[in-house]
Length: 195
Image 1 (cartoon, rainbow, N blue to C red):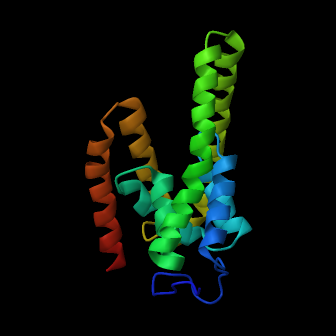
Image 2 (cartoon, helix red, strand yellow):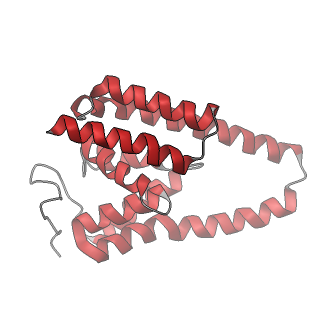
Image 3 (cartoon, rainbow, N blue to C red):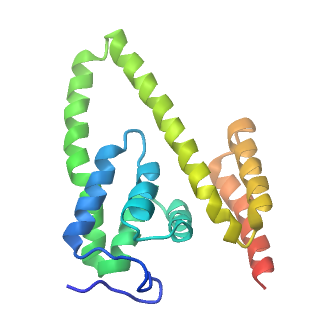
């Protein structure tokens, strides 16, 4: 089966998955590496290891995935799978992302229910939270090189990121208002600069 290489898909210079099964395997591998979030691992797998996307393509796809309803990484899997093999690829990528981790989470939930009262268990969960935060920061730093080609430019991207952080984390503005407000302004500025 040949990949679906339409105008939104990678050109001949980028490698492509050979089959939906390969999409399943790659998304399963990245899902099994991601404790507390797989976006950092997704960037490593899709950009660095497989080369199916450039950093700019990954940032663009992730940006769309973040504004769509549903989990970001599921949206990313669906769009990546569809990009190469249509609905079969979308299903394969999402199945790779969800099936085995679902079984693991169900087993861990049963184990947590049994041992939640132990101090070592709560300490382990706090440690995993710190690791997940570190992975998110590392991914943001790796992907910041893609801002050079962004229509807003690196400086304005940093300003919007800082304003978003301030609004959400410090001022506790609901995320929907931040997306509608700052997001609309950023889209408007990007549109104006692209003209």
